[in-house]
Amino acid sequence: MVIVSGYYGYHNSGDEAVLAALCQDLEQLGVKRKEITVLSADPHQTVNSHGVNALHRYNLPAIIRMMQRNHLLISGGGSLLQDSTSWRTIPYYLGIIHLALLKGMRVVVYSQGIGPVQRRFYQHWIVKVLNRTHGITVRDQQSEGCLRAWGLKQPVHTTVDPVFNMDLEVVNQIEGIALNIRPYQGWEKDVQGWITLVKEWVENLQLPVTFIPLGPGDVQIGKQLTNAVPQMRLLVGKDWLESARLVAQHSICVSMRLHGLIFAAIGNSIPIGLAYDPKISAIGSQMQIHIYPTSPRSELTMEIKRIRQDQQAYRQRLAERIILLRAKSCINRQVIASVLSCSLGGK
Image (cartoon, rainbow, N blue to C red; front, side, top):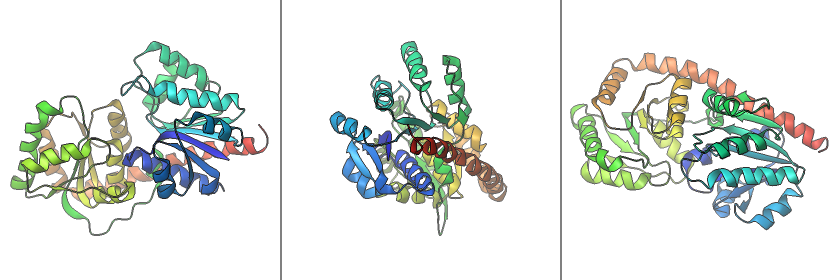
């Protein structure tokens, strides 16, 4: 019934959490998991983790056959339409949408973060394809602004990331820092500064620090830091849910990855963001939390000290904000429901 296209099967905790949230939305709309087919880089892992069907994302003949038997394509969520990681990313995801439209399927763009897109040709192409889709939700105001600036005419629902609507039960939260740093340009020149900063948190602030990888390349960074600071632990979750709980088990989370911040927030940990990408600034604005540059700096330590002095006030403000974001996240499901009812009524 439903085909899902996104950055799935790459063992990225954030994207796997988005898929879990999407499957939860679909189940609440009466779609069984066996009626969902996910295009994945690792179909076996996707089937085992989410209880859905899966095809390899580059098995084009099988994808075309599947499109002939299904009503709805959901493209998203995550940062799919951007050209900062590779020039191939946008052609792949737009190509899947275009194929679905050719096969008469309805298409929902689901909670996507749009951009950055440097190539003007891609901007025009994105608008041309998305103007033919049947429902669009984006996860922040900046994404809607990009689409409008490029000339999109279709209605756009500005929501928030669907993971805000997930429940994350955490027991025995400790007074400590969960740290996540992803590979970024400038890491090699910054590594010594991060080592110094982590030592300060462990030795001067007397706070345990745990490095928690959430995506490709994070483990290598964690190993570099733990080799230099043996007091710091490196913990690798077996799946996205265990990783999310590891993050939320700490009273404070310093994360470069967007979903590290969301995992912390929905688990009652206090997040501090590191803005390697505009989407981190966007999520910081939504949650009304502090965002700092990626380079290590003493302001991070000062922020941690402020949080420790007034944790209850920080938690109260964050909890109130999360209630609002959870409600806004439900719009993602409402848009799917509207398009799904039309697709079942006839293409």
